[in-house]
Image (cartoon, rainbow, N blue to C red):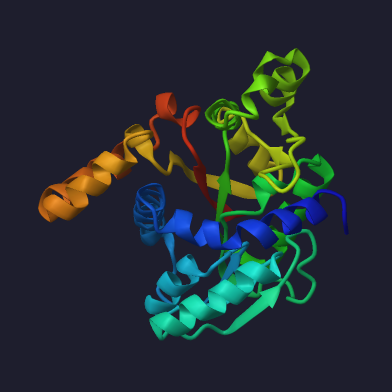
Length: 275
């Protein structure tokens, strides 16, 4: 399998250390804090979990520390090397760390996992055939009634990203570029080595699209909530007033599914169960 996959591998070959740095930044800390709080009530108390597209292993470490048996898989060998280092530094052991394409999970038999996290692959699959294949594979390897957590990007997030980068923002004056993102969720970045070949979703339609693949929606939430753009402020509260910080996180989690926030989120978290 090639095409956009090659571009994704090239991107993370140069970006892998920055991806770990992003996860440890104010933005990444808030995303991790909200995602884990949203996930925790729905995870099994024991069993096997696949962290698909798990990158440098931060969620794998968290899952393993909860007593779950974790398989960490990613398309990028560079990110997997970082994951091995990160897990070793944390003193955490997982069941396996393997390279895998989300569209082909045949190394695992049906119903192998009690839960699957796929918090990276789907916005890197612009071809609908590829997305449907990957969703089918994720559903296949999950036990009936098991949790499937997937991350997505809303369409405005990709336009906002384009605006934020000086030598890319000229694309916003190209009607074909803007229409492709807003009408089809199709994003192609002509700048090699950067975030490229992405798929963006309309949050209002996503639950129905996933239902067609066999996922019953439990929740759809923004992983930065109403604090999008204020991550540094939230991080300041974390360091100066830990009690107030926990209260703020509770509020952000409680309101993260408000429909008015979903379209402007940096990332969306969909929680579903296989039917």
